[in-house]
Amino acid sequence: MWVRIPPPAAISLSLILALLCGCSSKTKIPKDWKPSDTKCFTFLMPPDMKGKHREQLDGDAGDYRNKSIALSFEYSWYTDPIDGRPSGLDFQEGELLIDKKTARLVTLTEPASVFPYRAAVYFRETGTGKNTGGSIVVSPNLTMKAESTTPEAQETVKKIFGTIRFPKEQRGECLGD
Image: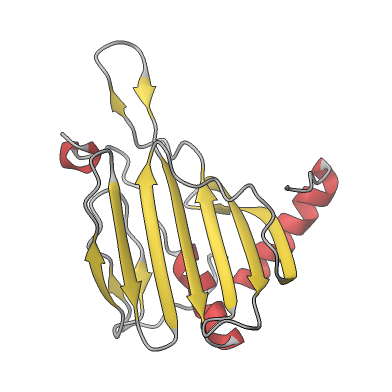
């Protein structure tokens, strides 16, 4: 269960998380980072990350990995809103702005895991939907999760999250057209 944060505290926590997570516009992204090959949005990642897409009828999904990070994403109308409080140490949550969109950021540690450092970001209604024939514009969600081996790798994950960008107009092939 998520703990609701009062607005003034949420703003302060959001600012702190944005500064800590490397999502500010002043964060230096290494020049050798490569763009993702996703259909519906883009992000940058270290050059040694390899990925693959998963079949998805209503959006885009995929997995990327290197020796210290395992990252997955789902972009659709039914993504995991990361609204259940997972068990784990150092659980932190908050909101921040990425590409001018509000996102929920969660971090925690699972010491017994091979990839103990966890982070996830969730965007509700990304604003990149399509017109369904009427005046309704369907806007999918994005959930990106990552597990990492070290605190430094978790910081890299947070930098990856900060590079997420959504197109102004959605391409048709993104949402199952």
